[in-house]
Length: 618
Image 1: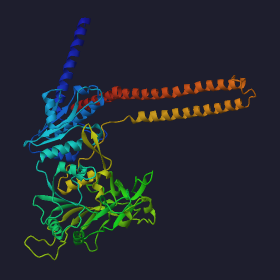
Image 2: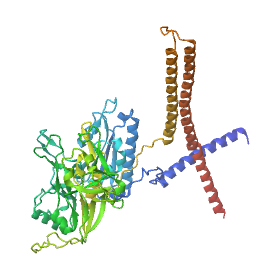
Image 3: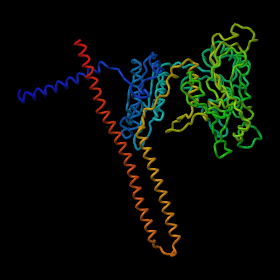
Image 4: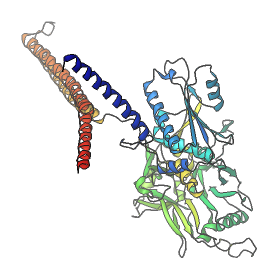
């Protein structure tokens, strides 16, 4: 065969190979369309079961509009990476919904109709760095009846809650008829006018979050019947409720209604000023109780006792000491003191409580008590009076004797309960016992709900952003969702962060910094020693007025200069060694990713083809 013929054959072979490669890519795209494999450590691209159930139960189409300033973020690579993460998560939502979610990605250019539409939705344009135009990274959603839900701006520091925020938005649009919760509160959770500042105080963050998911109807503290459309009573700091109101609550529970109850022996958030007390002295926190209902249902709670815990005690600033003081009544309840088998507390980390009470069942009670939050064994109950007008919390340590067993602070109460009004006049509507097993959650602390215990509200470009430092809000939302039957959102837990630090590089850097610091400290010690030596030589001279160095001083100084140059050289060597270690690690990773992995895949493919031919021959 001639050389020219061989060249034509080689060119034809390359052309056929290229055509075969293109055909294989097209075929794989068609055959494996929709097939995904999540190989990330935290399963970042795998939706939780709760999210999947929410997406699969969508009845009517939902439109999602992701407003992302693609052009304006060219100089912000970290924000662009997070925006891609948001878009990929939304695409996964759309794929799982089987066409019920319709996603549109829009770049709202300045002075465009898209930017006007984003502003109409209430999305937030943020100035980032030196970018002249506002940057949008928000989501708007609409359903078939015109309801709108938005996420004004996706904050990168809330990445762990990205799936939950998206699932909550979709769930709200998919179920426009919100569950109705009746609020019975003895404190102003919904905001009130402050006579001192002459301004309206905002509502509690936990109340704001509940409003996003449910219809909260304030029933007041005096009523004789619960409206028929109310499925859950949220009772907070009940004080001196009339018998008629307690009877209405009792019969509501007997008919199968659910209740989330917060009582407290000393509610700091409901402080009552006392005349004659020194200025700055803590006010008297008021107690709350439902003695008639609790006694009838077989629940034991004392408004005169507070749980004190030496192990879970938080350090607080009292204003009477320059340093924080451990307060045995302020508890940082950790995950190991929560019920890991209950869906409400299974994934929570820390819940802060203040001067909480103790819950238990009365003797002979037929109810079942399942603890949700407990103290540590290093706890005991103290008289509530000790926690009033307490300038020095360290005084609680006097006479403290731990009980050796955990005390229940919050619990789920279930079972068939008798009515708390057995001697009531018979009527067609009266039930002497619950028609079905009840489901109550009782929490012996009201301060747990207040902002100061779990959340910090900050202004973010004119928008109020709540950053939580404890899981109090998640605990309450989980309880409300669970008692109203909405368990899917509870299953959507915080996910791992998409940001994956180079831990090996950080270890190398930390090791090098340690060596660098040790060498630097040695240099400083030798410098101090040389200065001391020079000082001794100077003080021992007889011609103290001379500015010239003696031969011995000059020799000592020359030795130090040479030694300092040597140590600085060593410091540079340590820094170069760090760079070399990181470069070597990078080279190794490149060899593995670029060379070894494709080689292994090629060998695996060849082995599969060989096996297939062997089977065909057989």
